[in-house]
Image (tube, rainbow, N blue to C red; front, side, top):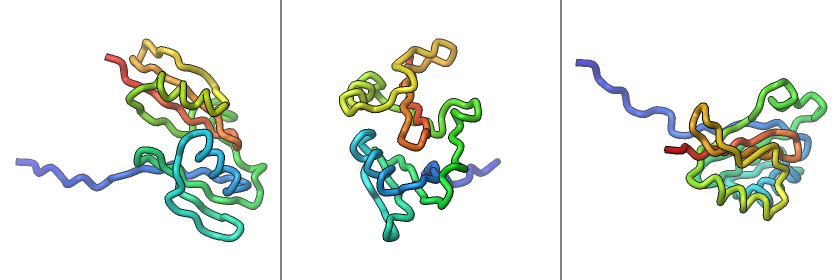
Length: 132
C-alpha cells in the first residue's frame, strides 16, 4: 500500500523586485487591501504583505530599469489569486482607483470570472472566481 506523504508546502508568495519598497508597500495597502506582515531596513529594503493569508514579497533593487513584469514579455499575470466573489473585489478595487488591466470578464473556456489589476511597478495581479 502506498503511503500518502504529509503536506509539505503550506504557502507560496510571489517575490517582486521594486525600486521603492515603501511606495510599493503603501500602494498594496491602500489600493489592494493588503496588510504589512514584515518590513526590514531603513530605507525599507524588504517587505511581506498579505491579504487573507496570501502574500506578496517586495525587495528593493538598485536598478529598477531591469525589472520586466510578465505582461511586458507577452504574458498576462505575475501572480494569480482565486477569490470567492470577483464582483465584490472588483467593486472594492474600483472604489480605490486601482489600475485595471481587464475585468471582470467571464472566461468561458475555463469557467472563471476574472479581473486583473496593475501595480505601480507594472506587475499584474489576476483574480478569479471559479464558476459552477
